Amino acid sequence: MIKEKAYKLLALQEGISNRAAKDMIDRGLVFCKGRKVAVARGEIDADSKFRVEKLAKIRVIFEDKKIIAVDKPASLTSDEVEKKFDAKLLHRLDKGTSGVVLLVKDEEFAKKAIEEFRHKRVYKEYIAIVNGKVVEPIDVQEAIITIKKGNSFFSKVSKNGKEAITHIEPLMVEGRKSKVKVVIETGRTHQIRVHLKSLGFPILGDTLYGGREFKRLMLHAHKISLLNYEFTSPEPKEFSRLD
Image (cartoon, rainbow, N blue to C red; front, side):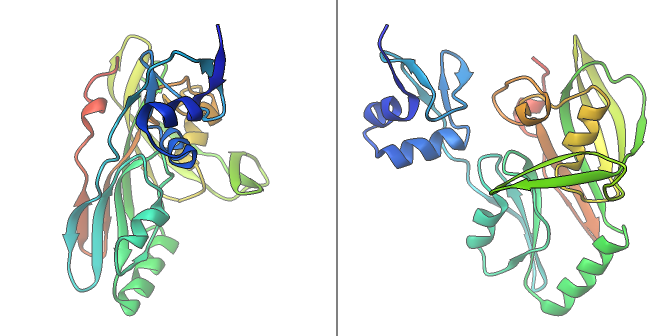
């Protein structure tokens, strides 16, 4: 069977440029034979047909003179979200993570909000689908160190790292998968992903940290509270079942 690079085949099928095809694959929007195409330059059968999902839109949850709360799709980076608004990011979510992202419009409010993060007075709640059976609450206090290589980051538990505190609570167990609520007191790079991996419960779709391949990274920023504000992003439909 003749093989060809995935992005080239996709470009031909969709009538788009190679660059646009690579971008679609990198965003996790392209599927072949029921599985996500993970590597744009990977070679697959030349007669392969693709299913392409639409790029989800950013939804504004709330806006006033100080702050904007938006619902970030899993296919967009936080920086791309920022470019859509006349405001600055207050915090970030990984590209594959969906949910609440906050942007600030007022400089004085931004300073106060940053202090709230610094003093661990911000409530941050996530939902994750993981491999393994989580049957009781778990508190993790394992320091995390982050290593930068080029434009990418990789974090791991290390005594030489910075303090990281994560609270995990089971919500549902089905077969060998679990839905969990995760509350973090700190905000280290990839903290939830690293701590869940360290417990033997990697997040579905998180191939960087030992999770099996899935349609997306199954991590969602569900709720955040600070300075008398509270914002919630509804649980995505793909989180309602664990299959």
